Length: 87
Image 1: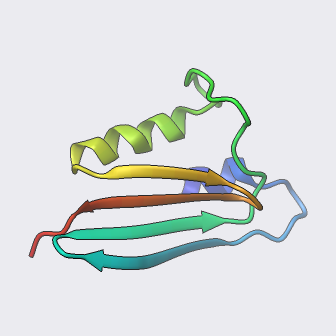
Image 2: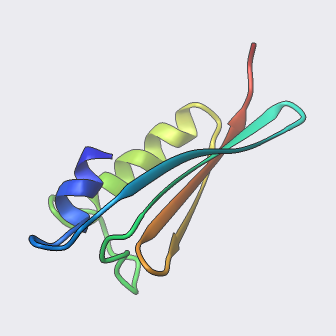
């Protein structure tokens, strides 16, 4: 989230990040993190330092826990992660 706060907001604009537990469906858990920053670029660029590296890192870590990341960009950015729930 720190990377999103640092990169997703312009100086002087009030910004907020909203982590929320969305739902539990059977043996899967869905978590949503959203913000009111500038959103994602329109095209999916190749990750390089300062340009999508954080997104690539999140997607790689998500795969390690069996998560399915879903990105949306409208009035900021929203990331939903659905992953196996283990007790």
